[in-house]
Image (cartoon, rainbow, N blue to C red; front, side, top):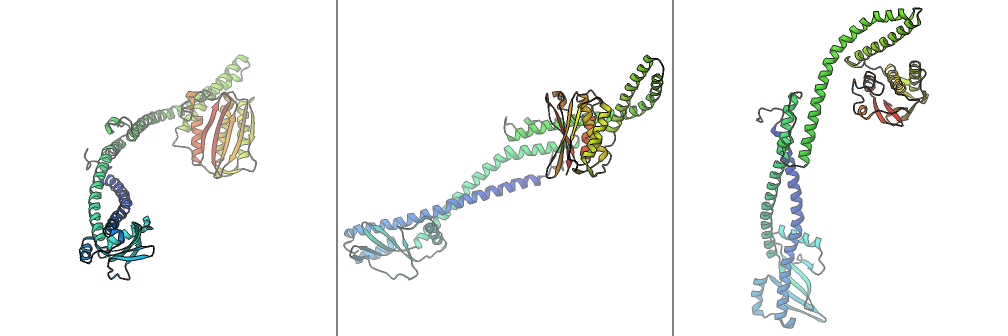
Length: 462
């Protein structure tokens, strides 16, 4: 697939990533180079100064340990060869010039080499590099038992440092270029190209996810285990799950369309049967009355199932009308409704603060409460407790029971439609309940379940 044929993936984003990464790497290399440059510059200056110190020691030794001065005829040659302008030594009660004094400008730098530290040395080295004609400087240090004052011309220091700078720039450019080349070739081979392949595949897959082919990690990278392969594998698994979900939703939509019609017709078909069953319950024969009640119970369950299916396959829950309402009032009404349906049933404790007010849709929340209470009672719970927890931005209502808990296979698809929970029902109650909660900005979740009981949590906006 050519890049021009795929408008969803353009070259610019990839180049932008490479460019930004390149700028970051180059900035890091520049800082490293600077970190090496100034200490090396000071080191080269120290080498030049040490050469002057060595020359001064040699001259002192040539002069019988500093007893005699340098012969007048040798002074011009020494000054041309070494750049030394004056060599003055000081000892206990002795002060003499081994090389005669020259005119020293008042602005000449005076440097005590025995006391110079790293940072002043780097600063003086930088100044010597920047200034072509740095002038004279007086160096003071100890040598052969004497205190030496050595006047030197720093022009030679500048030339040496400038030569070092040229070599340093050349070496750094070569080294940084090689590092950048290896880095970017490695990034292109191990990161950029695999990511580009994944982006192309995701773009192609997104055009037709139902019939597309999930990503093959072997096509993305040849490495057996790295971050890119794990990313490709996770993406492939996600695409597979997406296809399964789309297939399931398509089948569910088709089934829902069919069931909607069937459920609507079923309610009309069952109406005469319900009338006939009611007539049976009015017969004097006890057996006929029992048969009528049994038929009525079965028809009630059938019509309830049809009603649940119609409610679920609708376009969605009705728009909630959230108004400030006391949760205790809704909980009390739900307890009354559930108790009437499941009597005799479990003991229900509604431990909700009477003054706790939340903006909720009363009808929807009442339906959710009643559904959870009914499910817990039908599962065999003997005690159900409602409690609240007030958080900074939300309110949580826990519905806890002491029932036998949910089976493992049910937990994995608890809120999926048509998956019965514990009671053998239609499997729509919890799915509809969660949709009702989310429609008003809340949620419904399972906190825990087990032999000790089950706890569902309703989250409401505070």
